[in-house]
Length: 175
Image 1 (cartoon, rainbow, N blue to C red):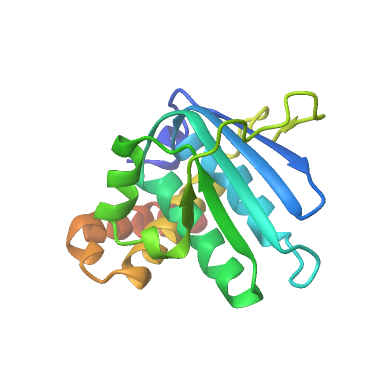
Image 2 (tube, rainbow, N blue to C red; image 1 turned 45 degrees about the vertical axis):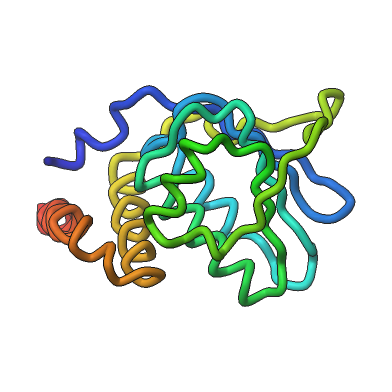
């Protein structure tokens, strides 16, 4: 797979709004590779000590791929170190099983709420622009390496993905 192929997928919308406790995030649709770089960027820009919680409204998330879940794991690890709680709200059993199967469920709190999102809030869609192929490839690599870091049984599942993306990135740099 060459870098030009990264990000050629249908993407979900990832909407974010500032809340009194931190941030509220809504995930709509199929959360995959393409919406992962902006979420990674969001996580990298969180300043420890400035927020206490991030909530993810997952009620409209129909599916998640391993890159998106690895990006969530990156955010979860950073949040845990910073004393920030991450709550997954209204996640269906299928998506909960996906998270559990990768061994990253311990990074999050799961809750079902009647009304988890503020419909009148001024949401920002962080997935409105397409990330570069290199940014997408770097996110894929970091996400899968994080999945292996959190649960080493993921090395068997994603070792070839990590190897392939490292090779693609090395080739891109050498050209």
